[in-house]
Image (cartoon, rainbow, N blue to C red; front, side):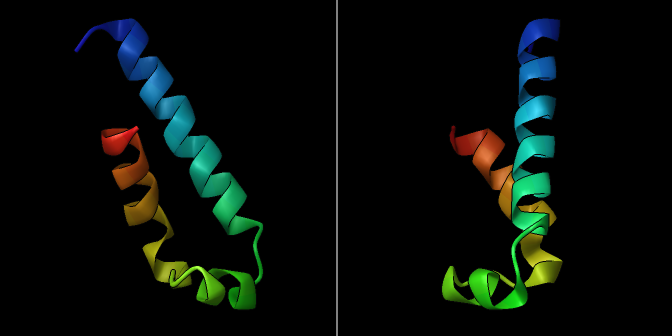
Amino acid sequence: MNLTRSLTNWRKYRQTVSELGRMSDRELHDLGIGREEIRRVARHAVKVG
């Protein structure tokens, strides 16, 4: 993996963590995500996206 891709993935991960972290517990629940799962979901978003 090259440096540019690594940086892009890190930014995408941090943005996802930040956006999900700003959501209320109810909003996360509606999405089927627990607060403790935010980082896992963000890692998955980087792999899939």
